[in-house]
Amino acid sequence: MEVRRLTKVSVIVPVYNSATFLPRCLGSLLAQTLREIEIVCVDDGSTDGSGALLDDYTTKDARVRVVHQANAGAGPARNAGMDAATGDYLFFCDPDDAAQPQMLERLHACAAAACADVVLSGRIALSRYFSMQMPIYPSAEFPRGGKVFCGRDQSSSLFTAARTALWDKLFRREFVVGHSLRFQAVAHSNDLYFVTLAVALAGRLVVEDGAYYIHRSWRSGSLQNTKDGLPTAFLEAYDACETELTARSLMSCYCSALALLLLRCGRREIVKFRSPNSISLFYHGFRERLIRIASEVSADEMRLWPSLDQWLMRAVRSQEEPSAFCRLSKFCRWRGQWLRLLRFLFHFRIREVW
Image 1 (tube, rainbow, N blue to C red):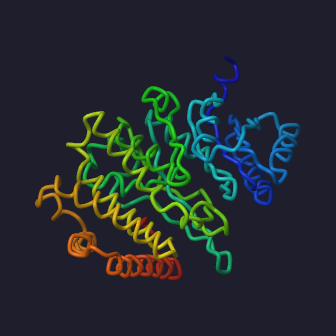
Image 2: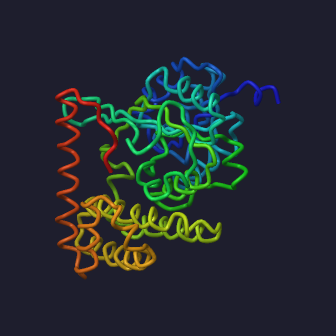
């Protein structure tokens, strides 16, 4: 009981064959200026010595705890980490990423001041070119200055403005447990369900308008770069979101937001496939779902969508084959990357553009 009282933040790190990156990741977590933390590492059946390396860290710092399990995937590993956590708040870190020293202190201070269920923040994108670190701040659509809001205050843009990433958010553990939020056992996109439900159900959301988490998305072999063999995994994750929002009687509030999330995630996902068969399988499942849920969105609500999203929606409705949507999605990706780079080079503050 004493440990639980003193632990302000539990950091959960799912680990699978990440021995190369662990010293940098764990070093940045142990260097946090907030000392009342625990780092719960879940060794998900690693075969590269990651488990032994983690055990060695427990002898160096009592704040590091290790859970060993047979390989089950990132979702079940995160669930195991949550089950073992004792902190007031939960933070999720990937083993190939790192954090600036003040991250947890600032996120926790913001959460405690606002009694927040979820704290939203920014990230630092680690470029594969020249090792540039590009700070990207929370969406401009959210209130700032410590103002508390709930999901329904931002219902039309909530899911896209909040993003589906885990690592730019802090979650109150009692809130997560009270709403029985868990991660899916899908090969990738297992954070989509957890984050979407969390921001939809949160009664108290707040923005910490900083960028502290250093994210690497381009590592060869990472989940973000190995999607060709799993073309329907994202769609399974989306289906769970829609099913759960319906079961909790939230679809009337979030139908437009969920349709917009599906559209934007769809264009981000499809450019990650290389196999024509994977692209076709994904697009047809994606198109069927998007047309169905968009039919529930009123014309007035859809007119509030950004013009680029309306343009993409028209393309999906008119094109049964994926070629046109793929071209538009690649253009959107190219445009977003160059806009961020230009703003970074000319010292403009980069707000998240999804």
